[in-house]
Amino acid sequence: MQEEIEEKSVRLAISGTRLTGRALASAIRAYLRHRANKNLASIDEHIQGKQSIDELVKQNQGVSSMVVGDAGIRAFEKIAKKYGVDFAIMKDKNEKPPVYTAFFKARDTDG
Image (cartoon, rainbow, N blue to C red; front, side, top):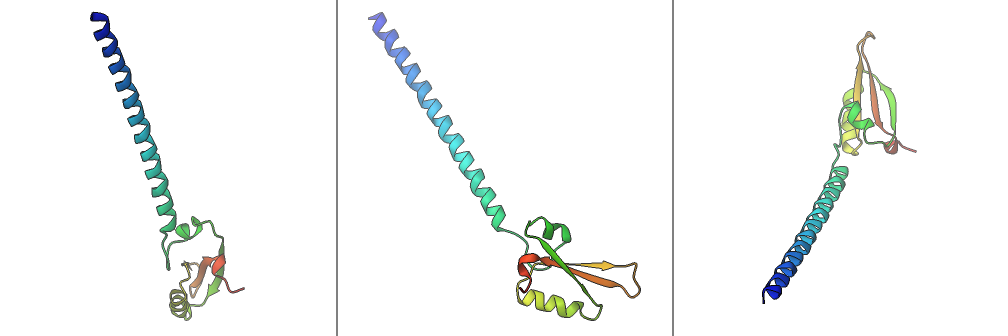
């Protein structure tokens, strides 16, 4: 009788350990799935339109540039926003009058 009770206790302990191991493995898989989905979601969400040069370069799609005069900067921004171009503007303060350089994704070039 005592042996039978001990055997059942050992079986219960082993099955409980297996259950705990499975639950732990399942939890780890769920966590890894969550992280993978979170990473994919962050890739899809990027800033559009006017942004800093650093943010534009971090998108790893190549960057092109062109010099825009002081009078044409507003027109450039208006057209870029209209067509959904991701761009950044940099002002060269060393020049008189200041010179503006527009940076934009290489994929957004007309070609």
